[in-house]
Image (cartoon, rainbow, N blue to C red; front, top):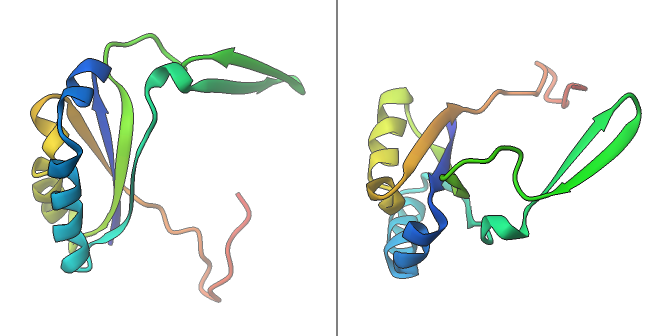
Length: 118
């Protein structure tokens, strides 16, 4: 089953970590065919939030909410169940300085294999 592990942390704490740790963890997941995709994000200062209300587009610099911890990256993993996903998330290096949100991926394919309209 697919799970999305969202990596959150304070920019300064995430930036203080070496990329090597995350790349080593990523390589281990890929070697076990458990990493579907993973990416680090640019700092939160580069974010733009887009909202559409009553047909009007509003664009604001920065993230949606003011908070100390921001989305720093993600791992899309393949785990046998939620417990294994939690165990894998606990090994993501930024978990030591931030937090990892683990969410099951919702299947949007119908029984015929076609994507459903959302």
